Amino acid sequence: MNRNETLSALKNKPAVSVLIVGGGINGIGTFRDLALNGVDILLVEKGDFCSGASAASSHMAHGGIRYLENGEFRLVREAVRERNLLLQNAPHVVKPLPTAIPIFKRFSGLLNAPLKFFGMLDKPSERGSIVIKLGLMMYDAYTGRQRTVPKHRFFSRKKSRARWDQLNPQVINTAVYYDGAILQPERLAVELILDAEAENPRARALNYVSMVGGSGDTLILRDELTDNTYDVHPKLVINAAGPWIDFTNHKLGLSTRFIGGTKGSHIVVRHPELRKAIGENEFFFENEDGRIVLIFPLYDHVLIGTSDIPVEHPDEAQCTDEEIDYFLKLTRRIFPGLSVRRDDIVFQFSGVRPLPRSTVKAASQVSRDHSIEVLSGDWTNLRFPVYSLVGGKWTSFRAFSEQVTDKALAHLGSKRQKDTRSLPIGGGRGYPRDPEELRRQVESLSAWTGVARERLKLLFERYGTRAETIATYMNGGTDFVVKGLPDFSLREIVFLAQHEKVCHLDDFLLRRTMLAMLGRVTREVIEELARIIGNALGWTEEQKAAEVRRTLALLADRHAARL
Ligand SMILES: Cc1cc2nc3c(=O)[nH]c(=O)nc-3n(C[C@H](O)[C@H](O)[C@H](O)COP(=O)(O)OP(=O)(O)OC[C@H]3O[C@@H](n4cnc5c(N)ncnc54)[C@H](O)[C@@H]3O)c2cc1C
Image (cartoon, rainbow, N blue to C red):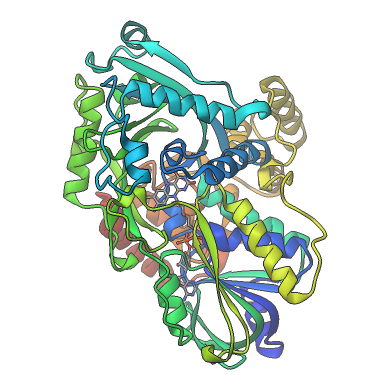
């Protein structure tokens, strides 16, 4: 069923077992798990899928080494396991990431953990090599028997300089350990939705539909593309609205204060020397002020972040000039010989972490754990319970979703039939891990579809084994290279537009592809894509022009793109 068919079906049959509000990774993960277990379920997302906190991540699948210091051992154990499962189940998007920690001091930070334990640490400070070594030994112990990634290594000043010749000579040691890079989180989220819908025809996910109110046994939804409203009658509502959770509960007459969000921003720079200087490593370290920051290899660009600033309203999150200064300064601290300037920034973004409201003094010390807050009973004025999904990380979405699904199944009186632990995601299904096997698959697909080998390699890089479906589609009609984007073709774009729930032009630029984030869009490219996608989705000429204006405004306002 397409979007319009789903909405008209809702008019005729408004009853649904579970309604999920919010299409970020936690809502989508739960949607997939419930769909797999045969539940009739509707997910609504007020914008595009994965356009909230889930679009603002640092792209790391990580165990959270620093949570050890907070004594959050359960969280680290879970996150390390989930990181390993992501590497296994989504190998087309999640890659092992060697992570280097440059260290400037030897003894600093020894007291952090005990002070934190007694609640006496109100401001984080930079950790020295001894504390980092201890932390990494514990982290390795958690990674333990699974051996998905190698153990950490420690390098002297001299060896560090030999590995990274641009590194600040004041660095006394570097430690290298392994985590994972989620290269295209937004694509992973869409693939989870497509998997779920393919598995269960009674599972439907709609973007650009908001939950706007409700009482008794009814919720009111609004189609943001047409302004039409729809009543639904769920047995259970899952509020997965991330940093908007309290606002969403409020729409149902529920006054909650579950979230105490903090804003985090990033910049993406095009700087070949910096990209070369970091190699394939992420640099992940505590800045002078004790904040955790990163310099991350994102394809041929570099991602730099992030901040951790308390905010009241998630809609206000914008990357500010002060944050940019901070990011440029921290980069200079690690690579003082390289001049990275504002002009090198091709994209910037910001989002709010849906952290639990907390009384700790420093934002970075708020727990990154997740919980389900249940609201039910006569006082709510609702005839269904509402589960609010508080906190969580991209890395551990599967475990959180599993917990929510178990609880929802128990409420519905159903039993779990399938689990997601070893379930490949989207183009991760059958993805060749061995380069030789990948070469063979490309070779045979090229012979079969007539698509050139170089193009196929790119398709595998972008879409994993979904490249097979896309290449077959490309072969089914006249295809040609797109003006301004020589590595994209017309039918590839049409396929994504028609099969991956694209509603607006920016869905395609920001979340189905990396085009915007890697600074590959010009005004001409935007116009060309509006024409191709508009024709594929049946837009009028006015709609195409409106989409161009909307995209230009969005890129300028939220992402500081100069077009
Ligand atoms: C700066 C930053 C860096 C991070 N880095 C990492 C990292 O490297 N690794 C990691 O594992 N995690 C990271 N995280 C954490 C992770 O990204 C988030 O915890 C996770 O994405 C939260 O997902 P969510 O689904 O709960 O919320 P969201 O992604 O915000 O989803 C909630 C959705 O609900 C929608 N919504 C709100 N109200 C309504 C309504 N009334 N009707 C319909 N829809 C509604 C919103 O539009 C939104 O899309 C980072 C987070 C941030 C902000």
